[in-house]
Image (cartoon, rainbow, N blue to C red; front, top):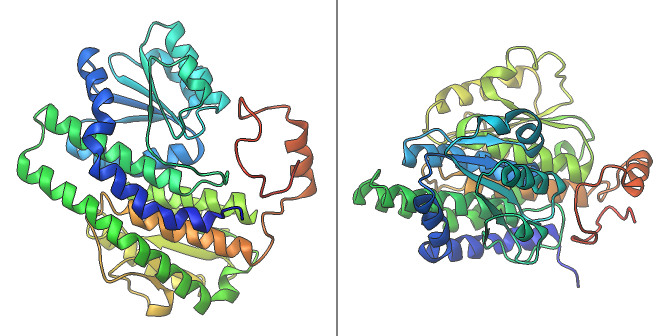
Length: 371
């Protein structure tokens, strides 16, 4: 029997534990590359869920490396930004290793004499033919194209890479190193509880989650990546409009199209900077719609509208389990409604393949039954 998205979500804690346990082995080549090429900073180049995985990891990376991490989509990098890269470690990321835009970014880097790395979720990929170094981020098998385990494992891999690099560069002391390592291990324990809580809240409020109206996801900092991935996952599976906004920016214009039919999901950063303001916004938005849900251990809403587990980790690593909430919701919302059925014109667009996004066919199961 073919695995589902939910199967891969449930495999995620074991995958995270494996990456954390064997972190020194898995990031060794990356540390050597950084040192040997005298890199100063990191430029991440990714799209889709890989971009969102980077977005989740970026605040943690910046915190432990005491540096700004650049994050660009491949198209923007190739057509608008590639000349600005100097001594940064250029890392292109693609779970399949066959995304055409990522391959193009790697080619541009090589053509301009810049050594580059590709992080991928599989060993057999076309990126290996271009990058100077290709490293598997240890996502393991994931045959469903609406990736879940892949994005969370990528965020975790980037976090442990940054942590080990920080230690090697003597930017972080042993006490702080041990603290963050412990927080990473906490996320493995919380992840299954997040899955259970999400299913519980979904079943309590099925009418809300099975509506076909707009979903808005609000957060900031580390969990803006969680909101962005949640919006992407809900949109590509259930085929309804889902939009992420920074919580404060939502009040400055994007709020106005909202109606009582909209669902708003607010993701807290758990005592990290901005958390108090985010929760205040969530509480106030109940004047707009009753379908406000909060992902927080300190929610101002009642239990029936709160995704919590009674446990938490440092806000900088919290996306590693908060992503589970978004992924489980996307799965349940889709399985109980349209079952991945896009509009006929989308099927026509995909079949025409005029703008291919992958260099190989049949990389993933076709849940949308387009072929």
